[in-house]
Length: 137
Length: 137
DNA sequence: ATAATAATTGCACTTCCATTGCATTGATTT
DNA sequence: AAATCAATGCAATGGAAGTGCAATTATTAT
Ligand SMILES: [Mn+2]
Ligand SMILES: [Mn+2]
Ligand SMILES: [Zn+2]
Ligand SMILES: [Zn+2]
Image 1 (cartoon, rainbow over the protein chains, first blue to last red):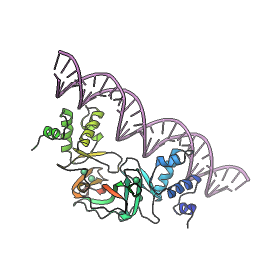
Image 2 (cartoon, rainbow over the protein chains, first blue to last red):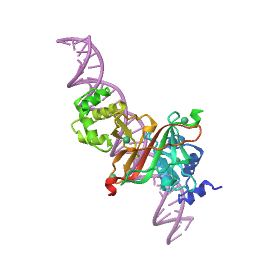
Image 3 (cartoon, rainbow over the protein chains, first blue to last red):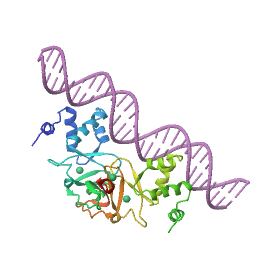
């Protein structure tokens, strides 16, 4: 079991109190979070710091960005040893129109998408909208 | 061959000069357009009017909105008799990272996506990023 | 340990796009 | 022609993303 310090260090991210707290926050949340979510959770901290922290995490492949169509960027922790850049590794994202939560469906990979001749596919973003398991019960 | 007037009237949209011009603009463009694109094409018209016109078109299912991940909403004409709301009717969207154009791949339908138990899929949005046919040639 | 250096954080400000209130103009109905 | 309703234009707002710079904190070198 790795500690948060070890995880950050292994990704060449300097360990600070703020970064550890935000990392912990992301682990505890099971859904993707917006910058506002983080802001609300850490009201004493400055928005910019939180913004830059999440951007650092993104750069170092600790979180990935999710565009679920709501217009507000969300972030979620990457799987261990995931390679966000590799197309075949990408999973579905589910956006619940009832509770407004966005969830990584890490087990559900994006199927092979064929595009017309001349088009070169480099990346695929797939968002399913509907009702999540908690809301459909 | 329907005239633009007839098309607008059939969708219960009052015919105005502005609306006809914007409709014509959308027909001539083969790619999805942003509000700024429309703005640049009609510099004499007010932004708000253009905005409300496109929103009216959207409400009446003349155009559909596309979120290609650039953060800027784009719009494209719907196919004739398309039912944007029906999931199985949805097509792929392709965003070229080179020329920044977004294209409806109306022939390429989104494959059936399975989600875990308890989740109810109502809508799927799929954007492929890469190089378009014009840029890859 | 102290000084020098580099990275992080906080504050203020900016930009960009989307959206709304309200007055005005224009079209339609009575 | 008057009354009514929709469309347009102008001004302003709101929300989110992003940046410059100074202050603080951590790291490294002397
Ligand atoms: Mn994810
Ligand atoms: Mn389309
Ligand atoms: Zn839900
Ligand atoms: Zn292109």
